Image (tube, helix red, strand yellow):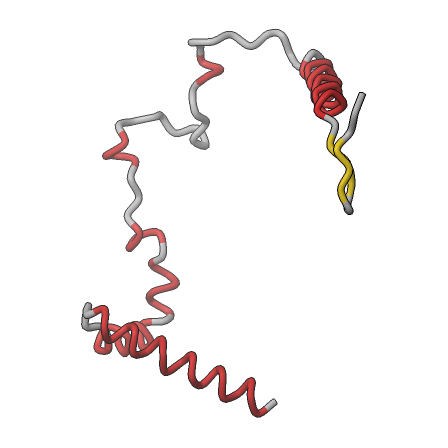
Length: 111
């Protein structure tokens, strides 16, 4: 067996294939300890939704406004200020990015 040696190790494809085969056997053996009572297409394959029945995806969709209601309500003053600043124009965001980046560089340069 010939190995390709470099300054930081060696490469031998036969040894790598042997190592991968041993790892495959190890994982396959660990998998064998699993339960054999699993049956495909039965109640076991259904998603557990905390006891709620599974409905169509449209009915199950939780809007972000409902999901983050408490967070947005507590930060309402900040969000109202940010909504006033929001223009939707990409060049405005790039300008803010450049300004913030300049401030960060100034702070890092002073320290």
